[in-house]
Length: 211
Image 1 (cartoon, rainbow, N blue to C red):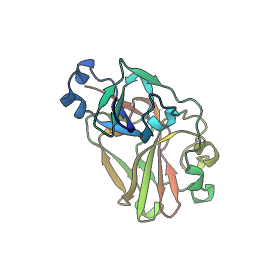
Image 2: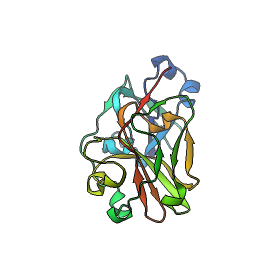
Image 3: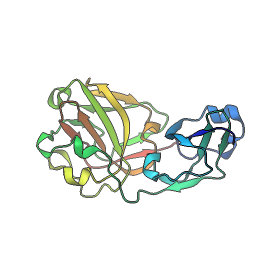
Image 4: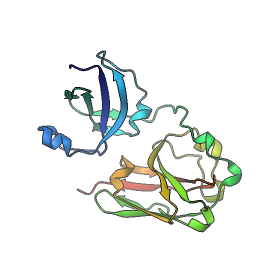
């Protein structure tokens, strides 16, 4: 493909019908997430799958776009497993002493349905701060802990997918559960305020696609 630079995108929702990739108009309507940009167009790129910020089986495609507008899409669907985490930067934000029990929703074993607007809620006064960043677990949920028994040493070693950065600390965030970028029954939420206080949701919750 002509061009000096390429950007790599991955589809942000699971289980698309293959026909959804038949035309450029259909491809444009898909929720693509940027995985890497400004890469030299040399015909290959080594990338840690961590940067896809997704996991699931037979659910994903890659879209490559050059700086001249040429593009290509991968054949079939591929899978992404959790694997071994790399430095995700959370150790710079999380201190065990600043853990608070502020999470309200999701409740334990709650079910989120893709395509149906739902919410994440927390006690904004207990968490404090003006802004929050919210993450969803894309990894093994074991040994993370709940409420005031969450373990920061385990949390910083797990893969967390960032949903939103620097959202106002209003105590709630509306979203389509497709923003969790996956499906399954082993999810947890991590919320970190700009004052350093943080919380995790209780137990695990589930994300399903009823459509």
